[in-house]
Picture 1 (spheres, helix red, strand yellow):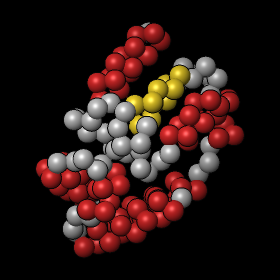
Picture 2 (cartoon, rainbow, N blue to C red):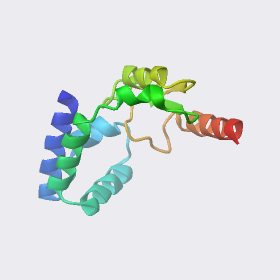
Picture 3 (cartoon, helix red, strand yellow):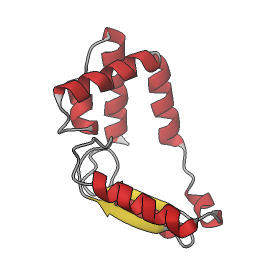
Length: 136
């Protein structure tokens, strides 16, 4: 939760100033190109107010759905980046383990927001296609 508290602070500061937050970018997508980072920052700025973004982050950080996971009946694929700096891969594994029949895939990479050049992007699409074809 400490990482998300820091992220909320960075979000508040960056959006209030209408300026990029290199600290936020380095948490969510460390190897982003300057163009990708600028596009991300512009999308964040256009998406809403800093207060709304912070309320969203603070609210979702308090939601715990783990007790409902064993009740999921739908086929489920959980994918998580191995070195995600915002959310531990252990959380992804835990979610998949609690959903009956879920498949877990660890993707290479350290971003929280995947980018087109990420090493796991091809595997993400392969696994997604495979999963959808399996369930079709």
